[in-house]
Amino acid sequence: MEYRYKPSDKVCSQEMIIELEGDIVKKVTIIGGCAGNTVGVSSLIQGMQIDEAIQRLKGIPCGFRGTSCPDQLAIALEEAKRRIIEGK
Image 1 (cartoon, rainbow, N blue to C red):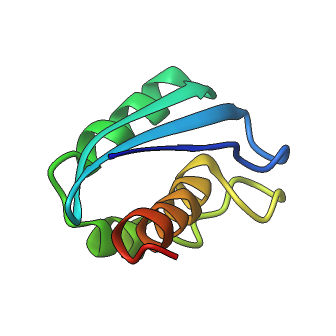
Image 2: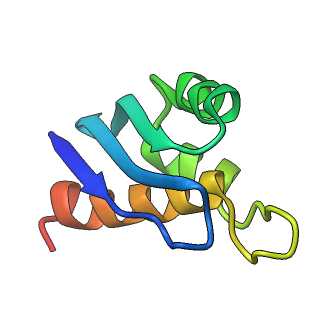
């Protein structure tokens, strides 16, 4: 299943496209942001269970912004889990 998320305007990325296979993160594509970081984070969580990815990424700050692309990805994964896996 695919889920699309528009991150907070406090971060550089503009859209996150998440592909899940059950509770496993199959693929993440992040549009915008620092390519090295966003591609790296996406690659690192590929094949990971969604709850573990959320736990690892949630709350990571980017300077004074109060959020970051990894934190926004955790929020996107939480929403995807709620909507796709739990059907809410």
